[in-house]
Length: 128
Image (tube, rainbow, N blue to C red; front, top):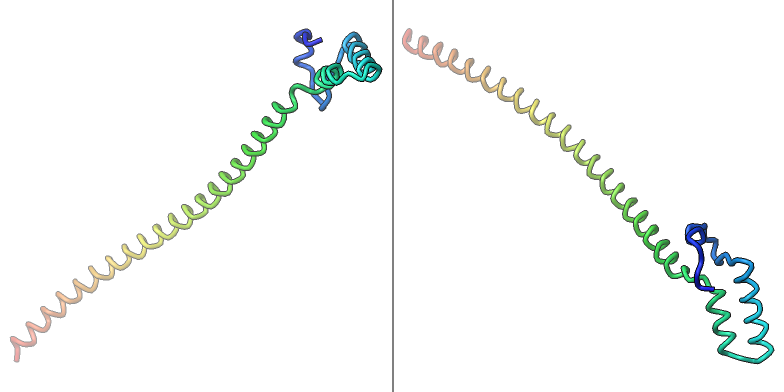
């Protein structure tokens, strides 16, 4: 009963294992005989054969998928936040660079006016 062909391993799982006709009949016979003989050993064997051996694996896979989806969502949220903040920082930097260039130009203009006015003051002082 434990052996199955390769195709059985690739079949989709919907919660209950798919049993061949022979396996189903054997399981049914075991269940009937365990009831008739009041045998806990046969009952246990029948229960183990009927149980889905992949329940634990499917549960672990489901937990893994859920964890990966959660991590993906968290990462996307972090990426979105980082991209937004990076965009703001770039705009702020560009604005401050423009402001610095403008102020540097004003300083040069005022320095040249200062030189002109100092020259005029020197001329007026010499004339007095």
